[in-house]
Image (cartoon, rainbow, N blue to C red; front, side):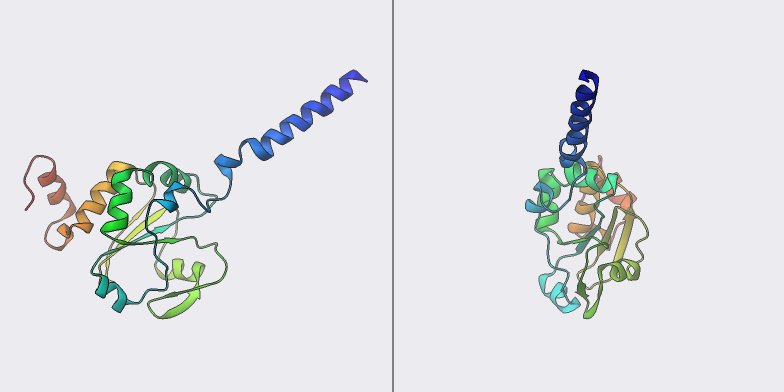
Length: 179
């Protein structure tokens, strides 16, 4: 009888731990410092609005189940330099293709999943960069740590992509001189 009670209590405790104890690690991504400390724009933006803002566009494609997406949210996006770059140098958009409903992007209404397909994203996380005119600058699939995303956001956000390759930018910023 005592073994049965101990077994039930142990099972209850393990179940409680699985359901509630790991919730912060595997729960929903709706909220948190990564969303609060970066100015994320609505996806209902036209090319004309982008041109009037005069900033390039950063789009972060992510799902809730993606381990490396969570890692970018909890590590990369919580860095003050990244928050500053994405909030001040870019129009930053967050796209979860599993979000229900429709989105208006460049005047066309579609689902988040269809938008993700239209922009050619096939894996998560993915970071995409567009000029203020809505032209693709580049797409970087996979996890970006703080240093790599900082280099990319400096390169694109400060306009170096217009007349330097990324390798030239890195060489100049690591000992050379940048104008």
